[in-house]
Image 1: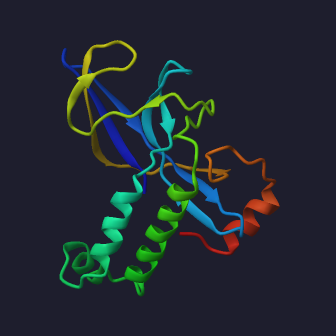
Image 2: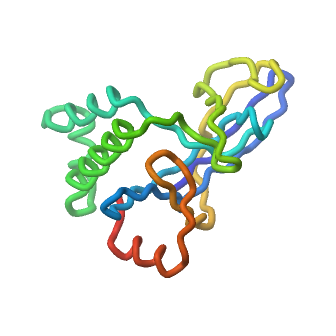
Length: 176
């Protein structure tokens, strides 16, 4: 489920920004990995828009290492899930995330224009707005429900032109 965000300005103004769902990376073997874009400043668009946010390989490897430790907090949390095989699916998803970021050569992209000049806000920290210089604080304020975008990207974050039948075929195989 996508997140809902707030951008708080020092003068008290609050802008609500909604995440989206229905975005997918397509690997060469047609395996599909879903992702939730996050709001970020795009220097090309000159506005806050949905962008990819790529994790570091080190952060993903650290989580995968923790998943191997039965007493780690994340391993305990995943075991509490009522969804059968959730721990295994989560581990597979994180392995796919690692594969994505280690194969990737391009930085995160803006999903509106495809540009690579994006600046992510630091969660819950006052910082200069990339466009105005005014201090703002960006934070996740909850979850929201949106329609599916049904957009597919290659591993470099380039939009793929896929017809409706191929989209259905890709998703019918299942995705993480």
